[in-house]
Image 1 (cartoon, one colour):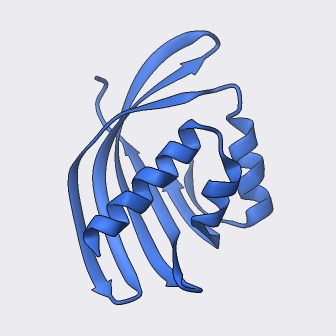
Image 2: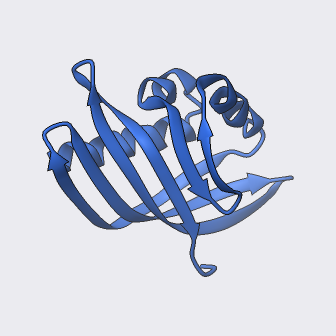
Length: 125
């Protein structure tokens, strides 16, 4: 199961990189819980779409996912943690970002969706 969860996580990030809202939406449980440098919040689908669309002019590229730890908690719940390195462009300037991420995946309607995601910025690259 842990290998599958990593594949879902990669699919999610690839959809973020490709600006594929439908894939991201279909891999997300709503409301989802998000925690990061802007705090903690529960996000419904409409808010999530607004957040997604606000990044349209801030393209990202996934450079690497490493340090993966995952665990199946129950046949319908799995957790994953990893380090991700991203490149993003803001106002024409490219920058790199390294984050520690965690996600909780739950089985819903014969598929898996992310119910919670956290990101903690790490030191600059």
